[in-house]
Image (cartoon, rainbow, N blue to C red; front, side):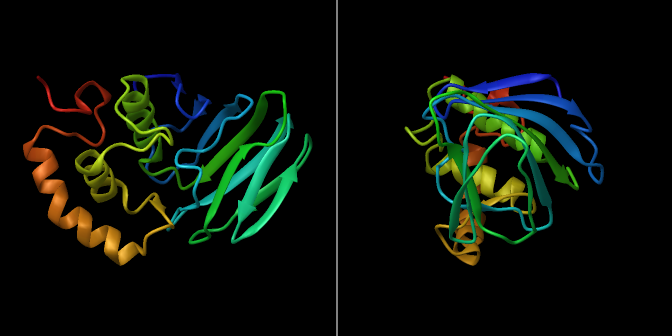
Length: 185
């Protein structure tokens, strides 16, 4: 990882990496901040196929949806999301949320966050923080072992990425280099 702190101005997320940001089998641990009105990229459920995600809420009110069950986590709450479980989070209050998150194993999820946040900073995502079809196909193709959106069945996402990602790469899209996240002019 080349950055210790990354921000997503579209979703209101900020990540400050603690350790293990580039180790494939080691956990990745970071401080996660959400401004009021903020949400995880897409504000739709996502899935980590192989990873467990552990949360510890330090401040604020974190809205949580795990496998369709919605609730609010407050300071002191700890919970885990098991692999293959659809989930999302958002700020459910008027103050900034601070949580410590650990993802086991870390794999390449840090590179995914860096790339998506870079696209948002460059104005190359929609209002939900999701890139356009070519960029999204490259990300889905590259990070399918780490994360995918639950809104579209995974086999359909993989088929879409398998067909469209090569076109995206030919057009200059990259999955894990924020400096080349969009085609050069």
